[in-house]
Length: 89
Image 1 (spheres, helix red, strand yellow):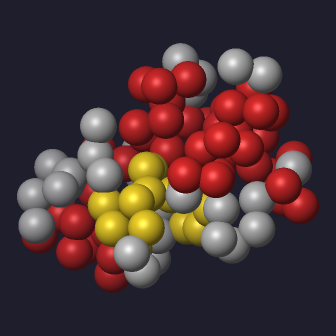
Image 2 (cartoon, helix red, strand yellow; image 1 turned 30 degrees about the vertical axis):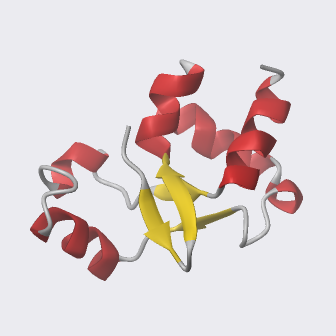
C-alpha cells in the first residue's frame, strides 16, 4: 500500500483503495461522480500531470501506464471513510 504526504496528511490513491475495498477503480470513480457533495476537496482530489510525473521519477509508481491512462484520485483519511460508508463496508 502506498502512502503519500500532501500538506501534512496521509493520502491513498484510488488504485490502493481498489485492493482494500475489492472494487474496481472505475467503480470508485463512479461513486465519487454520483456523490460529489460527499467528497469535498479536503476528502478527495485528482492528481495533476506534474504530480504524476514526480511520482514516476521518484519510483513511487512504475509508470504512467500503471495508473490505467487517467490521472488518479487521491483520498484523505476522511475520504476513505466516506467511501467505506457509501460502499456500506
